Length: 319
Image 1 (cartoon, rainbow, N blue to C red):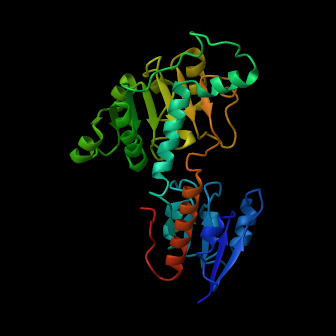
Image 2 (image 1 turned 90 degrees about the vertical axis):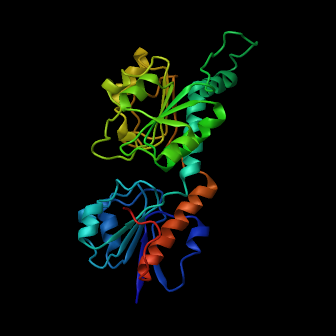
Image 3 (image 1 turned 90 degrees about the horizontal axis):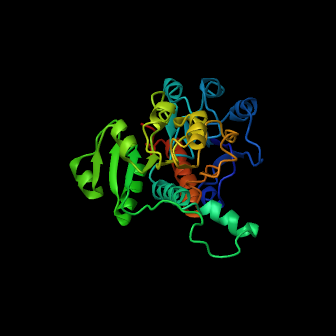
């Protein structure tokens, strides 16, 4: 049986080498993502699509090729894919959980530490030539050790972030739609609380929820005003979870002390009010961007794709 695969963006050679010679490939190698009409045109005649979060795979795209059998997303999130429409068309959807958990948790901590200790401001100050002597009052930040970490979303990544807090002797509060079992709570020394309690007591609030209708603008003016004026918000999950306009006001007016953001509401656009603020650390959606992890993500997507084409169960299907 023919196996024709469209790969919407170039993937690492290590992952590409997993593809056997009997698979016919169409790989988009341009720097610009495929437009929707281009994606639809290139998808015709294909049995599989390996895509990324910048590709919108809606019902119109899925209808372009009746023979499509699998959409393999090179990401843990899948809000770019209409999963219900795919199921109606018997198209399997897969993602890449687990392989990016620890790397993303590392980066959430990088944002947290950078915002708390004003690392970016210090870097700019040192490079600018303004630093002429040691100054006792220079760039005071916030301690991390011994403080309270609030984790909103206690799945794989949220738990990995909480595990790192043990090394900083932090009190860990968490909130999730589903409470973790007692063994996990004991292991991570994490206490389940309601969202309002978490926001009111945490010195650092880190977001690890999926993007769902009920989590869009989960952090808005109301919830930001529940946080301490000394608190720092970290978002390495999905941009629309935070109302950026409200966050600009919160940072500018001192409702909270700072933020570290890897994701944004309308990527690659960043709310213009965030850019000049010195109390926010901005990163271009790179939480999973380590060499090992990006190769692992691409490889898992390819393996998922090949499994379905070979009539086997996918390794990591979207639930």
